[in-house]
Image 1 (cartoon, helix red, strand yellow):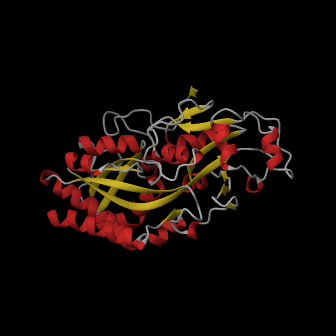
Image 2 (cartoon, helix red, strand yellow; image 1 turned 180 degrees about the horizontal axis):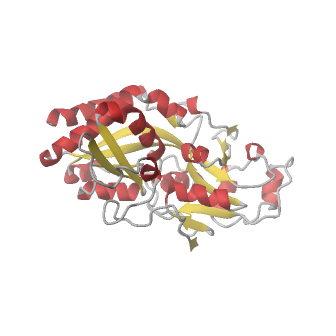
Length: 332
């Protein structure tokens, strides 16, 4: 696999060390992101999963001023979010990978589900209506395993008799960083119902390009003819990418709609993204601010999440998350 680095994707793992990390956060809030902390508002630093990055930005823009909070969030992947939370390198970590309970207790962290997101496969295939392209799960698996290498492959033509698929090389684009999206995509391609046992970097043998972050995948797919990559719909929308319909268990195909709800019956690639908040008394002021911000988002940010392409949590999960955030606030 060839490893490449998209020029606007952060390569440093020192999220809050020397130098600014380029991201949509810093572009949206250049006056305060990674600079001097404002005197009248509390600046919170988060790092982790790429999936929730757009909605965290939207919530920060909408609710931050009334809460007296500004939020800097760097999308370096779930693995970095888990590590940052353990090592207290940020006020909170973000992850699509659930940390086991024993590790949470050892690290003294509260893990709180915040929002769900739909993942899919973006394709750059000029002259082809991607909405009409039918790739079964096993076809996509064969592409990412190198069994199918051109779009004119007989197997793909047989499944798409009404499309003139070009004689164009297929370039799979995968995540180079430790990513919950990679685990979920790999589990689905393998026919597993859960990504719990998937490897942290499952696509190391994939012939194609490996890049950092969901934005790196999106930028590469947008630039490269014949490419296919996995990412969440909110980022695909941001980059103007076309997404495949996905095969369901009954053999039919589903087109993602934001109001599908968080059920695998209607869309097989759904992930819940979480925040990890330190419980330590010495960090209570900042942890309370994190809890206060996300509590407000869970109570008032559902419509904004849907409009951004996300899926609000099911009512019982949302209630449990609110209870967890209340406990964090109670410890303060």
